[in-house]
Length: 122
Image 1 (spheres, rainbow, N blue to C red):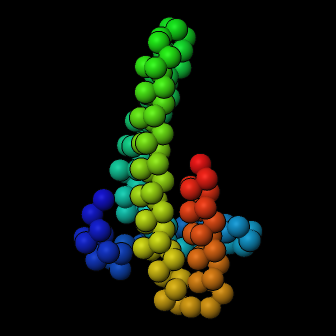
Image 2: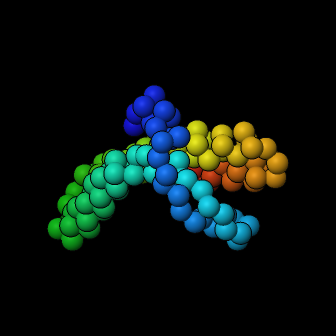
C-alpha cells in the first residue's frame, strides 16, 4: 500500500459510490480502500483459499496442531486486512469529514472508534 503516491492521487481519481452509514442515511463518498482495492481482493482471495485448506485438513483428519497453526495464519492475515482498511478509513474518510467539520466528522469518528473497539475485542 503506497501512502505517498496514493494521497497525491486522491484528488485525481473519482471512485464515487453510494454508501449507507450506521444511521441508515445515504451519501455519496469515495471509500478510502478504493485505491488499494485490487490488493485487498488478492489478499481476501488468499484468505478464502486458506479457509478451504482448513476444511480439507479437517476432512483429512490432520493433526490438531497443524490445523491450529493454519488458523493462526489465517487470523493474522484477516487482522492485517482489517488494519489496512482501518488505516485507509482514518486517512481518507475520517480525515475528509474532519476537514469539512460538523456532524459528519463526529459520526465518522464514532464509526472509527466503534470499529477499533470491535477489532480489539476480537
